[in-house]
Length: 424
Image (cartoon, rainbow, N blue to C red):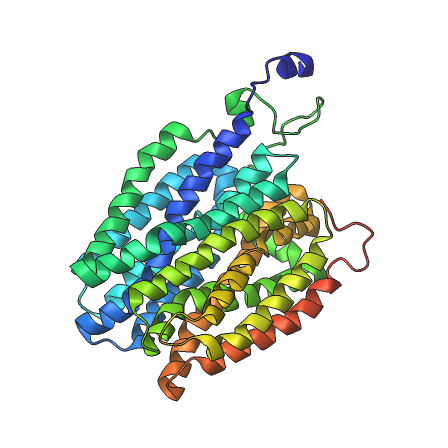
């Protein structure tokens, strides 16, 4: 059987096609996720809502984006990737369109915070991890890096355009664009995304000739997610991963991803210019994350995480000093440096998650670790807004985040310290 399968191998393995479809889906999802950051100032102007009221909705979105992840990962194992992703896109489209008729802050919290947060959380990086784990044996780190980079590519494509739409045609056009895009993608996923290698009549990319398909987990998705959490809580490495990814989310999507544009606006920079700079972070993130995936296949992931967090911390200490009314060379230096490091932490973190309870639960473990990432992001999204309201600027938020990154760089070196092998 193994011989006949190998004789029928196509020139281009279907795993790469699955990765491509996933990449473009994640690009769109990133666009949906990045939208609230371009709406903060337009919503302030349109409704007179305070920045902390608007940021509370973003905080709920970021939180649910993470808390949904482990259950989404378990649902993907139980019911299939395609079904979960199509349902998630439908939820996102419905929530985004619903915001067109909102009139009160709690409407924003319910629709963009809860509905869109749950929808995007059901895809995101657990989607990337699920596809990489199912379709690839070799080049897994590179693939995870590329799929993670899709989040940056989404920022690159959508942020300047969405910001321009909001400024020139009103914030409602942004909601309509996001809602329509999400709904259009549903039939595309149904047609083009294969569920697993067996659906294409092949083994995963790089699998040995004697490879056999793992047994599908039949356990209830909710029970599987909770059971995985209970077992993971007894493993010290899980706590290191949770803590480090908490700081990762706090310092990226929660702080810079949410507040970079309004912080730049406070200094007199135009919103479209600020959105373009944040998109430029995405350009360099593509390079940095793919390179991180390549390095993860070759270098101890703990050492990579040490450098990522330490250097990110240093860059955050510098940011309040270089964000001015115009784009200075120092601003571009930050954009390039921070972009290369933005989500470079993901490939080594996913790899280390596979060592907590074994490869078969690696994706669900990562779902819980990713939940901590979004809890950190939610705290920063709201906390930075509160600090801005109290002190009139974001400097303290950036300094606290930078300090936590430097501290985290020490603790990631403790992962798997008593184990001979931390690679999966």
